Image 1: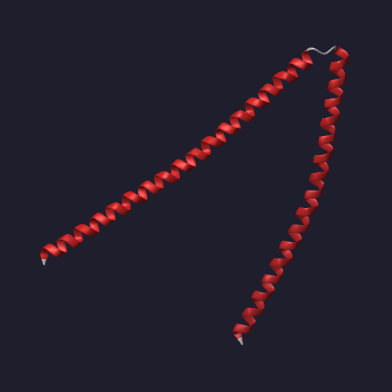
Image 2: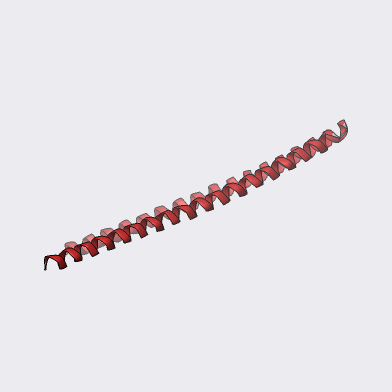
Length: 127
């Protein structure tokens, strides 16, 4: 009888060890997959940055070949573009301020309703 119990304990122990090993393998596999996803992201980001570098070098070479008047014209166009972008951002920020104000009002209104319901619930409990 002692041998049967000993064998049962051994079987349970082996089962736990196998389950533990399997769990560790699965955990390591999940970590490996996550690391591979991060590696792919990093490679894609690196490729994108290299493309940006190449585009900057090409633009630099293009500008180096321009005359003074052409460079001034490019500068004016760039400033106009920056100014337009600035105006767009300014309008966007104004819109966001209005939206934030509306959301804050909504939150306050909801808080008031919650407090009202809570107070009504407490009045009902006291009856």
